[in-house]
Length: 149
Length: 246
Length: 65
Image (cartoon, rainbow over all chains, first blue to last red; front, side, top):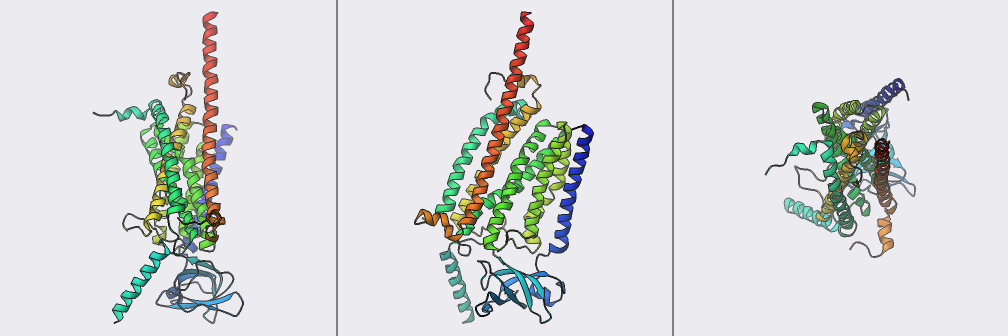
């Protein structure tokens, strides 16, 4: 390659690289900086209206219902303050469970129900054997019981 | 007794010192890798929520840590080379980039293969994943820019600027899970909090991280030696290498 | 010990595809890096050796003529 061609190639390569990075960064910072909205934010109308967005929180205990034999499920996403009902048809991730984290993508309809077309499980950063987890759960229950007495 | 550290700042003496050290680091890496994998697969218990799938952590976290750490080290040496015009530091920076890029790629790859079964998606555009992808582009940008410039000293300078500008991305990657809502979970191990992992799991992860360190050092030393030979092939000391194997 | 048999080890509680998929690619990448680097080293040694030998020959020729 001639030196001049090389120089042009360098400039082109670095400009492309910078542009791609800039586009990615802007894209993330604009729409995905907030990867999901909490139910409280949705109730406060901070989430986009009529547009697809993500809602995140915990699957409310006892809210998960399967509709007949279909793969359609409904559950409530809660942040303990507010809860939003979500309806989803499809396969749920393995970690999807009541009381665990969830992020769903979809739209809010006029009936106030969030119709999701993708449901992702959000797990926490704790890792331990099942015995330790159940021991912790027992301890938490015992503490709760002693508090209510 | 004082050691004359400046002596090792010359490519020639570094060349000989590194040649001896590579073997120690390689052996340490191999031993730690075997120990880490053994603990990870045979000693560490099953996880209460992720079952056996969490065992990807023993490769994912070490490579992700190294990808960020190596970038900082690369930018440091590139910056030193730019500021003080020291040949060796720039060569070390150039030698770090391929290993760093490989670890970044592996962090993304193993993350995808962990995300699919656990989250339900190979990839999401959340702040953690996107900033790690940008890190890969920074490494690739650094390498391709240096490869495109014939004069090594000018390549060093141009690379140093990319490397230094890109350092901003490192705290963004690290703190992304705290600053923004992400699908990626928070840190299990941090300086300020006690680890959120069972001891055997933590041990496996830390030993694998040490193995990744040792491996990186061995690779970087070896690559630096190659770069020294390539760049200094017309000097007398390289010509005198004849007969002395390696 | 976590596993009762090798097949249990390989199936990883049903996540074998994902666990081994990530480890396999990691092994390939690391082995690839080692291979590329030692290749680079070998060709470098070869070219340096040839260069050094040719200069020695030149010097000899100069001395004899």
